[in-house]
Image 1: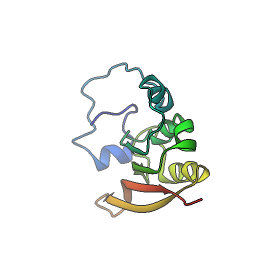
Image 2: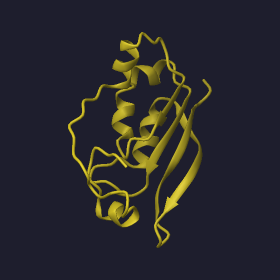
Image 3: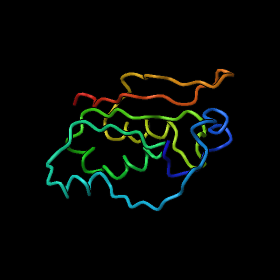
Image 4: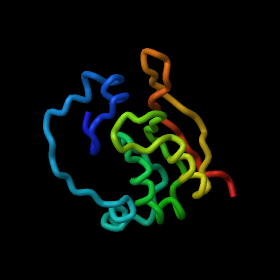
Length: 129
């Protein structure tokens, strides 16, 4: 598992074998809008995200695409603090609602041994105008 933030207590308890830090590296990032411009894309219809709790930041960097061309977003979402700095399902849902998206379905939900909902995948679709 690769992540931009270290695991939280809940994350370490939920994913003990995947969250042991082996290496730490500096990485550069760009926004989705910058990427689309660099690739000369006039639009993107589907966005798929699995960013270990940084989905909200990525979506904020897709402002232009979300306003104009994106129709579907399939993204990992967290319901608990898996990482020291992760966004939550409610953050993603609120941001996308402001762009005209609604939750269609949740998939592959993960719970702790105690039954606490921790993470899953969510499909958001653009609401009809």
